[in-house]
Image (cartoon, rainbow over all chains, first blue to last red; front, side):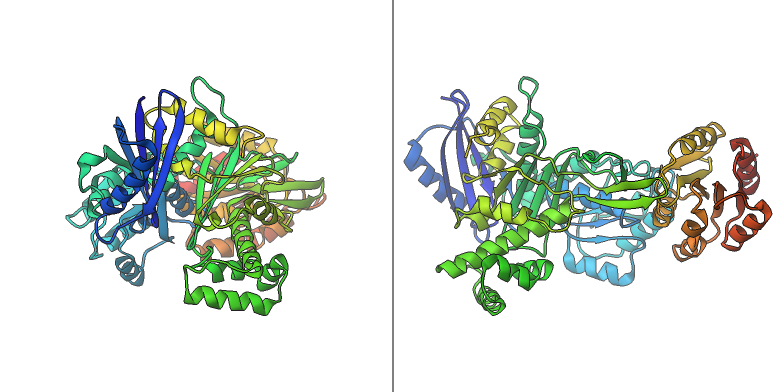
Amino acid sequence: MQAVLLIDFGSTYTKLTAVDLDAKKIFATAQDFTTVDTDVMEGFERALLKLKEKTGDIPFEKRLACSSAAGGLRMVACGLVPALTAKAAKLAAFGAGAKVIKTYSYKLTRSDIQEIDQIAPEILLLTGGTDGGNQEVIEHNASMLAKTETFFPVVYAGNHASGDICRDILESEKHPFYLCENVMPRLNKLNIQPAQGVIRKIFLDRIISAKGLSKQKALIDGILMPTPAAVLAALTLLSKGTSKHRGIGELMACDLGGATTVIYSIARGAPTKELAVVHGLPEPFSKRTVEGDIGMRYSAHGVVEAVGIEEIARIANVHEDVVYDWLNRIDQDKSILPATEEEKALDFALAAGALRTGIIRHSGTLEMVYTPVGAVYQQQGKDLSEVKLLIMTGGALNHTDQFEAIGREALAIQDTTVLAPTNPRIICDTQYVLSALGLLSTIDPETAFELLNNIFGKEDSL
Amino acid sequence: MDKKTLVIGVIGADVHAVGIQILNFAFQEAGFNVVNLGVMVTQEEYIEAAIEAKADAIVVSSLYGHGELDCQGLREKCDEAGLKDILLYVGGNIVVGKQDLTEVEKRFRAMGFDRVFGPGTPPETTIEYLKKDLGVA
């Protein structure tokens, strides 16, 4: 047997997945609490003990890990125009698996600089201007950023003409400077992969060790990427396939957490409506968005604000006062679990509301415009209406078997301009295999694809 | 990189897609950097593109007769966005029916456009003016 151990140091749980490469099988999983306050290896060892109870003491040829512990990868993005380079920067950071704490547009001010010092990002992504375009703003921003007092590496992915100028202004002990290709070299041309590659390299070289995750490296062959990047890798592999196997095509996934809601789409998002004209910045094939104000516990109020108290009350079939009451109890105890039928209905409504909001913000829109030659359609963002698969995951779904109903309720979107999936198959990643198989794809994509396809690809799969 | 940059597109709900491609080609051939926004372009899209690309001129096309409505306020928005002295051109079938071009030109100039071109203007004419206004030899 050729066994590989895949490790996900999550914010709450450290999850282990053992895969037999010869038999192409997941043969055991186990988890325990992540112990980031003391030494993450403690939690890892406890989880490993549980795993070995199932598998016996077998040798692992490789141990690969991803991590979102200790707050994940915290980034700040700077761009020029909100809908153009600032958006491109945000998409790049999200796709690299980061949490984008704040995105800035136009010129940074003194108070912005103070705020950035307070945020103390782990990486700052500096963009602005197409190649040959605006130089003034990014050079101004570089000189403002030079005044920050906290340490953070800067990834420069702006106007090519200003790269060296900004390096001269900004590079220091406090701000290691990484020059890479522009995230938007020409107008509406997205080029985010070079920046993502550099972000990942910094994550590996610097941030892992700063978080004490590199201790006892002997036990682990390496932390390869942030967990969200591993999930994105798995989803992209499942969609596109390998050189030997055809992928299953366009799909979406969501990760419903206590504080955030994350949506993934692996899809071109080309118009399905005839006569639709696409506008705005093209979006990446593998797109990830993070809603920091939407979640089941820490961000429960955000869900209610986004969909409205009456909608939550309607879905849960309770009076609005009951919703307020549940929110108060969540405020008092973030780890509260629903016990009664009514509480379960309330959590169901919150989950559906969170998911719906995340999907609406992630999906493109289609608006009908009347012209002298008749009605035409204007599309912004991705058309995901014909996506056939939605994979659900996240800690918030641990305590419910209602995930499919939650998904259906979330997709019952009244606003007809939203290009969200209309009738996808809905599957829950109950075993948390996505991040593990994303890791596996870096060494054995064929096996990773086969396992993913067995779990999610089949019409009758659970 | 010394090339001058133009942002071009068809404004409003106008979907005439062919002429803008011809202009795109002709302007590039004449030595300009061209950012072609295509059809159904909003005022905001011209402005945002011009900021990122540090454009020297915005060339607005309109062929369906509603140009006058669509173009109102573009100059003011440019001023607001910091594109203070950007060159603004407009051309095509910019008003309804066959109106006297000098009258039409007067109205568009009052809206802040630097040059106004009527129906059937060959690209060469526009290129000539662009070179003159942008100081290209």
